[in-house]
Image 1: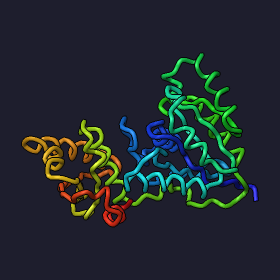
Image 2: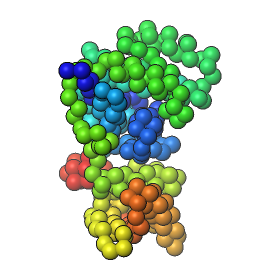
Image 3: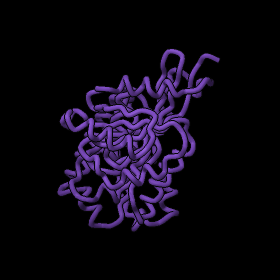
Length: 291
């Protein structure tokens, strides 16, 4: 069999650009992005199709030390993915080569192909890259060390070639026209959650979750979406709604614009804020909300 395929986990500490890299590789936004760490909560699958090969990427939550049930679930998802894939793509930030979470990730790497991608080289001085490469070459026997910029695409082609050389003969796991396994409702909920991260300056984004209650396409190409934003206290609800409803309107407007681009039709987005006390610490609530 001449066709090559394999599963690749994108792993690393929080906020190193894992989701940005996946979106750049696919040329499509399948994973939400924000400047805040720990934005990704679920494992996101992105499928990259090439001539004679297929790469199935899995974007994972950042691996970090945590005690909360929500973050334990996130880290647990990332660690489970490491065991399931064929190739590991370990991403670090060139601006933070001494991130204490890096050694924690290295300890979890199993005896399978692992490529180290040093990201954000567009922001780090070039003369600092060689010392970083030398340092990590001594820390672990990586199969390859590739400097990249997920933002500009610099080095990404080299990275893909390194991954391709480690794929094995096998069938395509997904059809050619499929780039993610996300459901439409999950994609919508993630877009809304991203806009919360981008609009709310306080810690509230970490205490919020989004579920889509209904998606219905009606006449005249109008998609009606009803979604719930779950928070943990009345004070958080007040912040999220904002004075005169300005905050929730801003979140809804920016989410609606992006959803309309994706679905190619007009969207009516009904956002409702619900208080579910301490949901991030309740294992039953976590499962109900998709974690």
